[in-house]
Length: 198
Length: 198
Image (tube, rainbow over all chains, first blue to last red; front, side, top):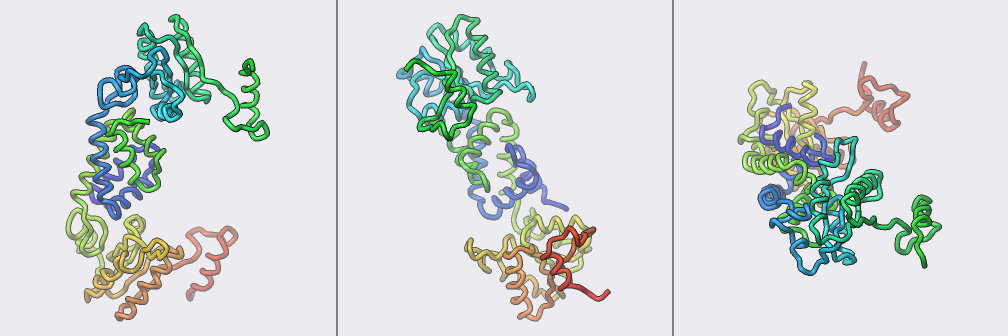
């Protein structure tokens, strides 16, 4: 089969997207060319623009268009609290709750030895340096409760404590509105273990 | 949550891809920005290039970088046969078999009344005009054996026959190496119906 060069190149290029194999790349290319040329142009501009403008915030490591992001630069945030999350999406979820007014550090990953992601790859040194700014009083580890997130929290926690920092971990337990009857056993066991004085 | 403008725009733009919702668009954006900036640049170039260079072949409607595509322009193809397919991917599959040496017409779709895709949207008029070039002797309908593909073949077939053209449909039957024991009943019934003199 002979594809025009630019079509073959586009199909190849679409495979840089996570989870996109040769068949869906071809489907995407045909869809864009046949039904959404404006969308394709917008996507090309969006990519170029984002590559141009986005860098990582010097303080929290999240994506930002300025050297220091809006949250880190805000005088209304409590600089004594530093919350560590795996990904920008996690930070966004926390922000949506309006329940946290401290600062963040985004690891942009998690320890994952099988994928060759070690402490260096997720920038734990930068986290420690950041936490030792003399203002941070508590580091809240808010990585996921997956085995990788747990390992990351454990490892980071040890490093931070060794430098004399106060470290905490977000709580596990029943979800809001959760009923014992419908919650998995692991969560119930953890809620018992983490019980607190009433 | 406050996303930097160019990041929000990129996430939005990724949703032009078929099957990509807000969550996977965000995941794709973070993946590209964090782990594959070269890939993102390549994708932007691929899109721009394809939009620039690709048009639809004047004769067969397939994507091409020249006004008439390689297949339509080839003197080694038999111009008496015109094979109608739904999508470029179908043409590619037929070409891979090396079993067909005629020309093609690519509908770029199929009749699908529920999605408001009627005869006009899939360019059946262009097909008829193309088939009436005075050289075409037989139009082979190779749309899929789905209900939409069948409807398309039926409708196109009627229009073509009304213009005095010879029309055929690719065969349904047992696949190569197919065993009666393992083939679905519908296919067996069709193979009986379409039996031919041995």
